[in-house]
Amino acid sequence: NAGVMQNPRHLVRRRGQEARLRCSPMKGHSHVYWYRQLPEEGLKFMVYLQKENIIDESGMPKERFSAEFPKEGPSILRIQQVVRGDSAAYFCASSPSISKYEQYFGPGTRLTVT
Amino acid sequence: KNEVEQSPQNLTAQEGEFITINCSYSVGISALHWLQQHPGGGIVSLFMLSSGKKKHGRLIATINIQEKHSSLHITASHPRDSAVYICAVDLNRDDKIIFGKGTRLHILP
Figure: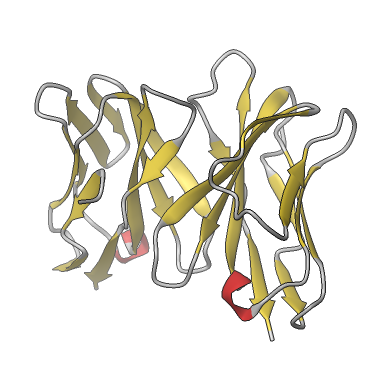
């Protein structure tokens, strides 16, 4: 049973480009969470999604960031017009529908904006 | 004040020592997690607990709900235990997890 998968593991973008980060939850999991870890800071919640629904996006920056979790395929975290301050590690976690408290983390995507 | 506080921030110990990392929180929680983040960045969930004590190999996690405090212990520590250990809490009030800033552990051979 494969764990949570994220790709790419490393992503380099120039300022102004778009970044797309993908998260494939564990098989049978229908809840996905995205977290951001800025350099020298702790993890911070960004958004919580179920299939085709955004449940809580209170941690998402108001502009340039969006997330989706379609009926088929991975969850996508999209950052438009990236800036240097977006450089961070982005982690997703998934949980089964019966227990959203049991979260399994992916390996993360390290985004570098040059 | 942060809702989740960890101590110490950094800890260096000799191989074989007994290690304790503490986590205090100030909000109502439904569960507490201990996570391990290795130098490469990947995060592994070690424990999720809402009461009492759990043990896995050389790792032990305890939680005292009344005192809003949890500890992670490592017995017979080894250099491969060197990592950042993160405490995180599931809030009662919503779906979020709040993370501590982590404890950087370095075990010397």
